[in-house]
Length: 539
Ligand code: ADP
Ligand code: MG
Image (cartoon, rainbow, N blue to C red; front, top):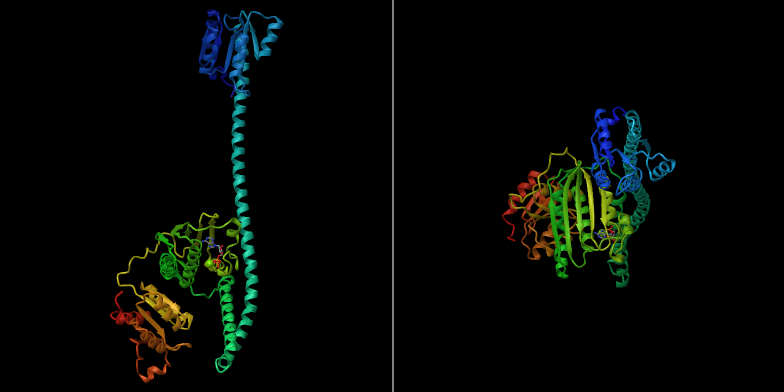
């Protein structure tokens, strides 16, 4: 490193005697030194120093206008404190006072005139070696400081991540503990409710006979309360139920589910809000994304819960926005609203069962169920919200296929999609039928009994009803009669089991357009719909 220090250095010579300057220039030139700048006018010295940035200054002391002492001070003032810039004083005045004064100002070494060339070179070289060592040290220091700063930033980042992970873990653990507690409570309550409802059913005939009206009403209230409670328990189950290995999982088309959930909830966010003079805009930005393995009706319920919460959060209207995307093998579903938002406390607790800010109106079970479902699919729920600034719920779901194999965004189906009410008291059957219809591009709403069908018919437009025959409260045939009595012309397909005596009797009940026997196949269902399609009343 110290090899050829003269060759690497830049020099500044300040001396009012031109012959001295020339001598030094010649000496340096012969020693193959780096660039040499010089002046005989000390008033130019500082600007030359600043513009040429020398590594050493050779300076005369006694000069007109500005003497060497002031120049040393000026140069020192122009340098950063930590810089070592050697100043070599050339003087004929060798009194101890002069030396001391120059050293006091910041000179580093002396040469007495007349100059001895060998000594000049040795002193210059010594000073330059120190200068370059200083520079190298400074370079290493800077590099070290940079490394320390980078490392500190990295550590801070890691710490932040750790803290976030820890918070997440605590939250997960809290939810897990709540889940266990909920499952215990639900189990005991379920047993009690089963007893209450079971004995209640046995007593129903008695209370519906000739007991006083007040007792009948008390019995009705009791049964309704027990029924409501059993619904709460059932919903609680959605939160804590562990993933079941045998659970039937099919690829779920996320974009389709969003569109269906929006149709399904339209009466709430469109009609109900409009009736109250409030407007909710719904926007979708659905990218082609892969499917995930799950249960389509369950997933629609997840979306429905999020939609209802968003609507609740926008009592004076606003925008509800769905965005789907695929990131790192995960499907992201963002559900964003411009509503009232949540405080930090609310957003950290909103997934807990029974956490609600809606008082009597809320159950606090919607998001707990969302969390439960998404957990079972191997996904996660992200929440971003500020009070007064809306909320964003992001569901991250593991894609069931490799990236690149994407499901197309559903377009308008070529055949006219039908809106079908599916009623069967067996949950699994009505869901399977609904899935078959949805796979063909229709919209299906599974319902548990005839009363719900009548309610849906009154509330909106439907194209076809597919009904099971044997149902406890109202049979399919009775339902058909009721529908016709209301003057509704929607075609009705009646599903009959193997043992249904009606088939043996051979007659198609009044109001029914087509009989279809179980077990049902997708093909049979398609044929049946084709048959009745002509009967669908115009919208
Ligand atoms: P519920 O709707 O019955 O209150 P949820 O579990 O669905 O129960 O929601 C729990 C709580 O989370 C709500 O009471 C509300 O405080 C908060 N919350 C949920 N979604 C939103 C949202 N989109 N905007 C603001 N707050 C919300
Ligand atoms: Mg809710």
